[in-house]
Amino acid sequence: MEVEMPVTPRVAPPFDVELGTALTVLKDVMPSTITANRIPTMRIGLPVPTITSLLNGRAIKHEQKSIPVQDGEMVVSIFTRYGHVAEGPGIFHVHGGGMIFGDRFTGADEYLDWVERFDAVVVSIEYRLAPEFPDPTPVNDCYAGLVWMSEHAEELGFDRDRLVVAGANAGGGLAAGISLKARDESGPVIAGSLLINPMIDDRNETSSSHQISGMGVWDRGSNDTGWDALLGDRRTTDGVSIYAAPSRATDLSGLPPTFIDCGSAEVFRDEDVAYATRIWEHGGIAELHVWPGGFHGFATLAPKAQLSAQAREARVKWLRRILGG
Image 1 (spheres, rainbow, N blue to C red):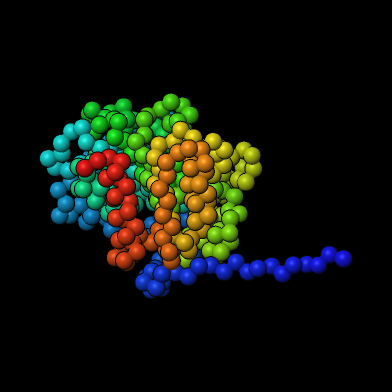
Image 2: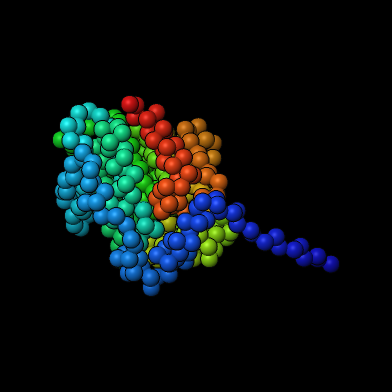
């Protein structure tokens, strides 16, 4: 006679107290669950600062260019300090937004700080979004942008050997994907990969993906929405590329030094921890931070919180070690 074992409920870790208060303010503009019918609203309804307001008071120059990609062109924004000294670092930035929203200015408050601190040249790209442009368009756009930035290092004024890729959420997943692609195709040399709560596993099967449902920011249902938009019927099948969902890569050797962070109370926690662990298993270098009580994107959505300041400073310290200065 078989005895059915009781199912242990998957209780989510608590939110940091300060961040929990911030969530009560955010819930009306950033719902826990984003369904497909909400994509148009999310694209126009997020109350984010304009790039003009973010640049106000900063000695940073902003230029825009159109660069060629497969079947079209892509706009990139180039940020440099006034008085920029050539041969410093370059940072290739990929914005977040779950593969379905966001633009090249998403996360600008943080990468503008990197321009100021390191005299870095930052290139942020307007890759095409799902579902209108499903995989492989987003990752191919990002890789084309990375190649373009590396090839134009002298013109842009940075040292090609000090080029870092960086991204958050979907941008972190795409940054991981192009790091793998550059390794596999002998592409641009990458000095480091900065992956902020990266979205890297389409299967949505981890404990954390079940824990974070109907709560926080970008929950299990939102994750389904984003991956369905990107991959369609191929999702969870063997037809998914490692460049679209880097967690599927079985070989993580030969990658650049990698920084990974996430919150303890977010969907991506377990896949991000597993990715860092497998980099170590393959003899690579990874720095991992799991911020206690952090919800997805907390350092961007609640930048004044103490935990957010600590998370941002950890990224700066890693960049300083990788880039120098």
